[in-house]
Image (cartoon, rainbow, N blue to C red; front, side, top):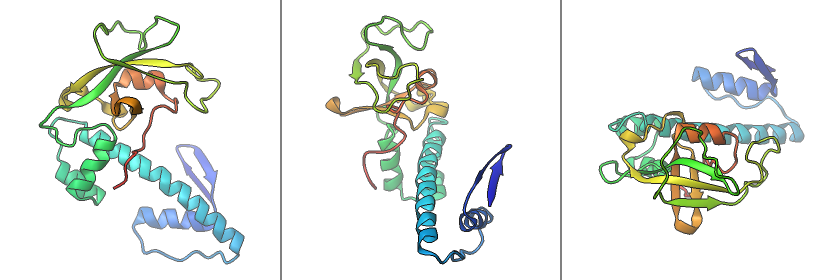
Amino acid sequence: MRVSFGGEGVEVPDDLGRALLAALREERVQPPQASAFDELTALVERIGGVTRHLAVVKELAMCSADASGGYSNRRALGDAAGMSASQLARVLEGHGLPRDRRSGGVDLVVAFHANGTDELHPHAELDVTGLPEFTLPPAPDAEPTHQFAGQELTFYYRPQVPIGRADLGRSAGYTLRYPERGLTACVTGQVFDALAGDPRLDPTRPNGR
């Protein structure tokens, strides 16, 4: 079965295609029609990959919704996600967003440079004098074509920026983690664009729920 959207498509097992269609239609779950062990095992593996991908997309959407304004409705967001208030708070906190927006804010990365150079990214002039910083080692398994592949990067951040002023937008949910300091820092949209594709940008949480 071929699943397509926007002119792009991919071949998927018939059972997976039927399951996706039923899920989108909110229809009753039907058992797979395949009977061979190898086919069923391959189906389970494929569904697992889709589930993990959608779980990350779900959390990024939740973070973007929460960062869309200083007073977004977390109760409605929790209802949509099927989570209690404490579960939702742990997910958002794992992505660098504040558990309680009335106290403090987010550590917000506003610029970085590759060690050995003085060129700041993004290229717009930013006053980083006096800002705290942290350095991350070269990204593991970075794409060879990526601009910063194999480079050690130093990041500058503004501590505890109120969420309403952080203007995270599409970068909400993506964080840089500095374990030595226990720091989980959100990134501005400009930094996100400069680092897009860099595996150091983490859309997953280190803590369970």
